[in-house]
Length: 73
Image (tube, rainbow, N blue to C red; front, side, top):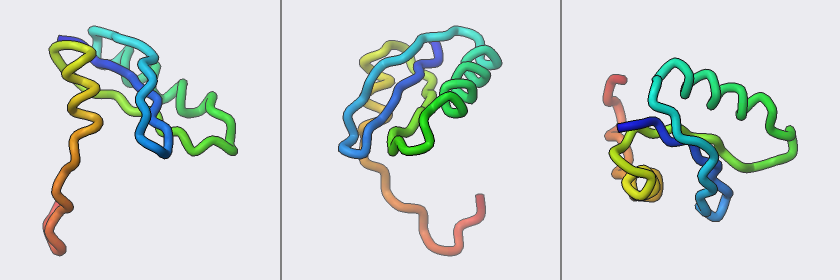
């Protein structure tokens, strides 16, 4: 399993950026990509842990239920 990094546009289009096995390296790469983005972009950089790139794409595009109001973190 690996960490997959994607850029997600406002219309939810995914662009694969990188695949990294080590968590710390993936976290650093994701943070670096976020800081290097132009200020006027609405794209979001996300990292996810998955078995394959296809599974990572599925996880990032899946609709999630909103958290109940008052739920603790």
